[in-house]
Length: 517
Image (cartoon, rainbow, N blue to C red; front, side, top):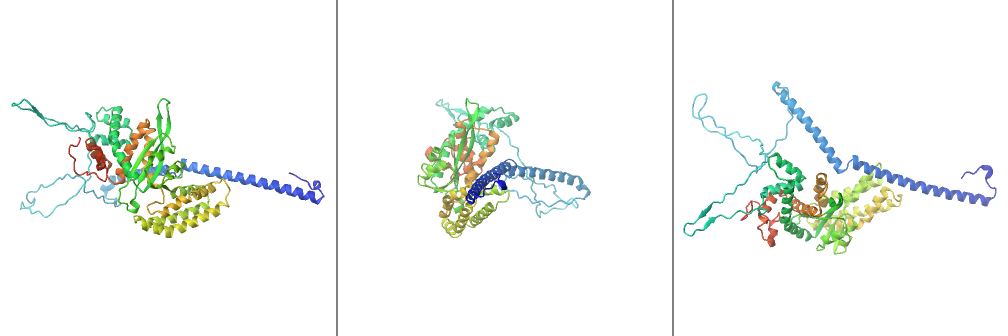
């Protein structure tokens, strides 16, 4: 609105009305500018987050950068070693001292004794043994295939014409070709080392063994069927806990007949009380579903009562109505503030992170302490910090533009206040949900190789194997040794005693009677 000096009215009341109108227009313009600034800031933040996810310090990008740096370092060390070996004869190279490798005692050792002197080479006198110089080198026996040939002699009795013969040993797969060890290799390669079956078939072909991918798939299916009761035993152990961690991740699944994939989910539930010295061993239980509807966690946890630590996904709400306490994840809160600090100066976000760092420092001091001591220290030290933290957030929120990235992060933290405070009221709870996130990390790695699961049944089979192998790892048991021992026994093991095959119950040092080969 442009108004010239000559156009101004002389009446005082008219001038007042004109000023009020201009103030109103100015106020509206300021509101529009403020809203635009908020939208711009929000878009800039989103762009920075997307750029960081694409090019910056996302976890996958960090891992890739570390991998690249390791490759560069490897090349430099190889080049240095090559140069050193070429010039060492001239005596001009001083090698950098290396850390001495200690070879584990459990490795098999093959001894070569070099004892060539029967008498003194100088005077031919008798020699007296005064000691040994012993040195060791590390060797490897390349992975190789072998054939186990079972011979069962038959005998006839001339007196009664009967035939006597030892019974045939059991096989993991009835009349099947693979041994328990070979089946273990296929399962571990697929579900832990992320090698699809067609690649495993190609590896066998290089050794002259013609095993088609479809045959390997049949083995996986039959092993999954055998192991399902064991996975159900792990489920019972997990859901009997008083505190659980829960999370989920995507599982692209081929949709038959449509030529495309749909987004299924893997749900993970982790029992891990090692931080507070729980007597029960840790375990992880996974389930697969074709979607992310709330009916799935509600069904999975229908027999569970206690505290559930998870993210803010609303699909768990029905679980919380059934005698289950919600415990939030402080790492999720921190992550939102951290993303904002990567977009530019953000004093409020930085201050929030500093509060959270103080809380994590307290957790380090109470790790491996009993629940009552953890609870007492949290009540004494953590609660005052959290109270100050949330007072700071509430005060800051009133000064922030609605819709901005920082206001959304603050609002999220405030909305999670009850769930965040819950960990200070239970010595068994954790400050974050990282236990569950670690349990599904192998699935994220596997997605890069598999691209998708073949079907719903394929997702369910994978959940069984992830459950068993993941639980073995949590208990610091070699998954290869454990799975081989289980496969040798489970076919003949009473179904009502399957708990004897759980990682913390099985005896790997002593073969069981009537083991399969």
